[in-house]
Length: 160
Image (cartoon, rainbow, N blue to C red; front, side, top):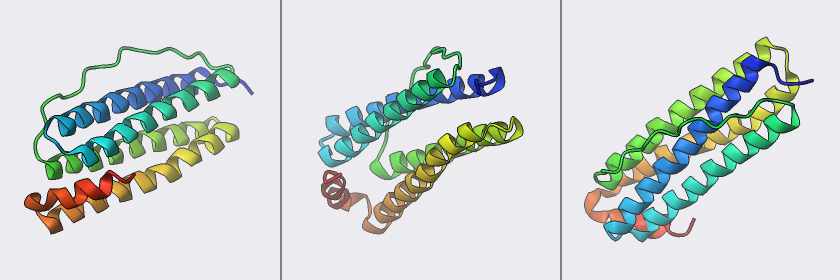
């Protein structure tokens, strides 16, 4: 079955979102490096790479299914960041947003009765559960430790 236009367009939007997300995490990584929090920088750099891998997987899947892949304009990302807690609250909210976007594509695939695309996307749905939980856990730990003890989380996140 060839991807229909509606699904192909939805996947293209998600590909762009994943690429934007990669740039978002890269911007955060740069910020953390510049303020000397190398563990946070490492974690967000790994996250940046993971988001780009998601885009590549979606591109590969779309091509295999005969979809029309188009890379749109990737909008600029924020470059000014605050304290680690504020950044990780932003990360959590962003991951919730990404989850909602993927859920919408699953709904489209269901409406279109495209079981292969549903199956492909369920891996991302499961991964987003983990992404949200991880970000929320880091937020909770930063609140518990307090900003003055961010070095504890910096050390922990550097082991990713």
